[in-house]
Length: 436
Image 1 (cartoon, one colour):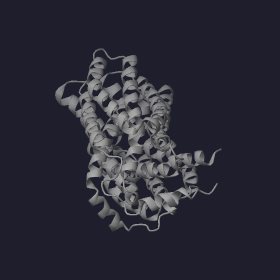
Image 2: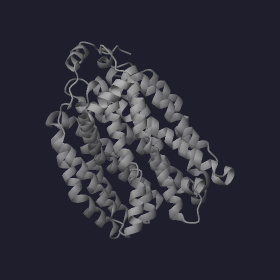
Image 3: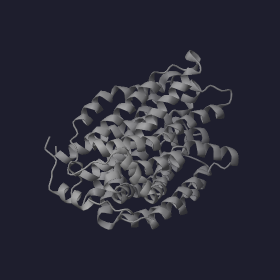
Image 4: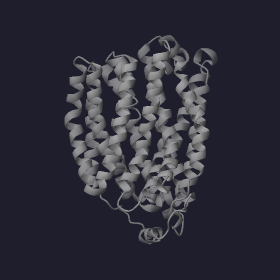
């Protein structure tokens, strides 16, 4: 197998686990709510579960700063191994915690703690993987390489959905509600040793090794402060990605069954198809952006989201069927995949090299914490107070506006140039990663 392909697989392995954890929690939010947040009100129980899902995202900005600074100082490989370890502790804690009926209030507290730890580690995971891929990319193919950060997430979406489809076909609804939802979490625990083995074999990137000096944590934070406009632009840019992604993946099973009253199996099959669609469009878009440029794709996709999201949702809720849900989700998947394939690599390109991981991770984490991570909870709440089942389409349109504004004002070069960026780049071009 080609050395570069091996490196992409190794670095993406932990990203797979991070997204798998989040997807499983989102898919089984209703069952998790009944197990850990019992309430006489089904809506209140579901909302508590979805808010716990979203709470993990509040830790992402902190993780981005702490772990991002660690990675920019100690290396991409060291940071990625650390985040995988923290993610592993989080999923084990949630999978093995007894229900509220067994240990009382301690149960939701342990689950919340596991989610916060997952969110803390995830704050750097996406940025770390994206930066690593951008720094090992061959000339002219950076967009294609970096797109595999998001593509690995789609594999996790498909894997989690496939397990859900199998469980729904083999277990009775009562068994699924009682204990079946734990099975996907235990599967995630079982693959942790394999993922550690893959990631520990990572080589450090040539560009990082070529740096003459690594900044301290305080220097990273000062540089981030001086580049605050880039962080704001990046946050707006990522809002389009994170809202659309969690809408069409984590929220689809809950929306399909609880709002549209379709079967759980139908909703999970749609989610499986969405994951496959995302997996196709992301690398295609990344490669296309290498040829046509990033900004044209960003602008076109955000405009299409603004124009079509709400009408598509109106059409869906007016007599929902499996095929209508599939059609709408695949359209939104197309917009997400084409946008994100260009956006992620563009975000790595506008961040100064000495804070590339921390800057990318902070922008991504802020967008996820403020908007994307709470998309399932926000959508559920908006439907409840408005009575309009299509209102999630307006939330998607709002995300499109954020992405459009960011795409129009973003520049391909950082606002505050790094003193030695050119020397770093020249040195990196003369170094190749050792073969494995």
